Amino acid sequence: MTVTDDGTAARGKCAVAECRASVDGTCHRAKPSPLDCEEFELELAGEATEPPPPAEPLVSLPQGRALRPDELAPVLRRDRTARVVPLGVIEAGKTTLFCVLFEFVTCRRLDGWRYVESLSTLGFTWRGHEAAARSNRSEATTGRTSGTVGNELLHLRVRRVADDALRSVLLADVSGEHVEALTTEGRIEPFLSDAVAVADHILLLVDGEQAANPATRPNAVRHTIDIAQVLQELPVPEYATLAVVLTKVDYFPDDEGADTVLAEVAAAVTRCTGAGDVRTFAIAARPNSGARVEPGHGLAALFAHVAEKPRHAPTSVFVLSRADPAPTILRRIWGSR
Amino acid sequence: MTATRVCFVGLPEAGKTTFLAAFWATCRHAGNHEPTFEIVRFPGPAARRYLQEIGDAWFEGRKVGRNTSGSWEPVELTLRTPSGQELDLVVPDLSGEAFRDVAAVRQIEQRVADLVAASTLLVFFVNAATASAHMSLADFAPGAEQAQRLVVEFDAKELETDILNAELLQLLPMLTECSESPPPVAVVVSAWDTVDSLGVTPAQWLETNQPMFSQVLDEYARSAVVTVIGISAQGGDYDRDHGVTAKPPHDRPLVVTATARSTDIGAPFTWFARLPGSTDGG
Image: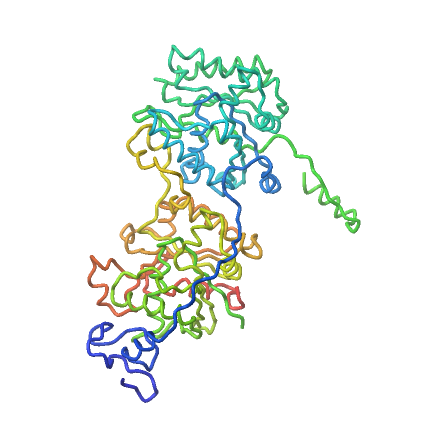
């Protein structure tokens, strides 16, 4: 070992004959002075290995999956949240709509909106995975929400680029089987009824694949009108908006055919529900290859509609203490408006 | 003066180990350079031995392996900046599995949670070479060939790094004392040499290639100071760029910010040390 006058090891004077840590004849190895490499290796070899780790207690975090109705408090406490209830028969395209909406927001592909957070990211990604896997297993079929795995809500919090406003939406994943049970047997599943009872936006889905085919079009239209009719048996809030959403619009050869179907269904929905303003949307979340429309067609317009601030004012509950002076109480009430 | 606690965060293979190896090696042997950081408190024996192993591997131009020392202790050391500020550097989980579990399994070991909670700076690693973003269902038509790879059981641990990192960053503030005012974050885009030729800044690269994470980072920046730094601790690909290992250690790293290029591997700490108020513990 070569030690300089001040007690530190001299660089480039390593005692090891073939020091691997040498560049241009200078040892750069990161070792504590004043050791040379040989002594340093001995020092390292003498150090003890730590014992195996003991079992560690774990801290649980929010689960990130789709939310059950009894898990909504953290969402509702924080924001005025728009509750969206898409209703459609089996294979109408709800699951694909949810997944592509999430994917487009998170990938900066939904014009006008930026992703903020989701309390159900794993719920979205699981549904997307299942939809992709199923579509590969059975040709041209997207995943769907069965009665056993649906009945949950998916959360999305976004920011509108135009004015930086925050918006939260809860998408009710109502099983198509439950919708069909309602229209065919009149059986009302509690989740469906509860979701509709607090809905801000109800979307009546028309399966575009069926509606584009002249042979199956009457059925597709009738299914949606059936749903609109049974809505009268459900506790739909007065403030809830109704919209007709034509999914898989890529199956139509042109816009005209799609517009005709939308106009027909919207007119029927207006007649049977008495709703004054039924908006219509044509979307293609996941068009077939070579389709005339781009992936995600129509999603931005639909999302702008459902992400609007809810029309209703939630009931305010003020917890007051005796110590609160009157001005403070008034300020809190005024500030909540 | 109280020490500031810096915590390394990142998924497996995010670049934490290689960064630490380069940082350790350059700190401990300044060569002809003025040392930027001085190590004033060393980690325990097992962690120290491991640091030396990876520092040696880095020096010799070998790929730095994962922690095989059997050590379970977090790597903890104290640095002193040129201005005299002390930074307690903590790497609670070099393997990154604990952080992946935060995002995928929604659990974290208490000891790791405690270390994160006590931090005044998070250094968050994202590997440019292995980063993956989610492919939308919309981009492959039903029955298309691309869907073949998806016919496996869903496993959140296998999600793309964009989603896992976004979730991790979203969840980390919940571990801190006040989630409304989380600690500053320095995002290190590691393996920057693999994307340097694109001619974009590290933040722009994140925006394009990790869009979900980048948006969550934008939101985070509304309540805390954030920076994005591209760092190649190796300085290049050892297999292709043989000149890298011939360079003196201090000249190897490639460090890129929005406005400058350098070889200052300690850039995340330098950035933090210059923040107003950072000298009193953040």
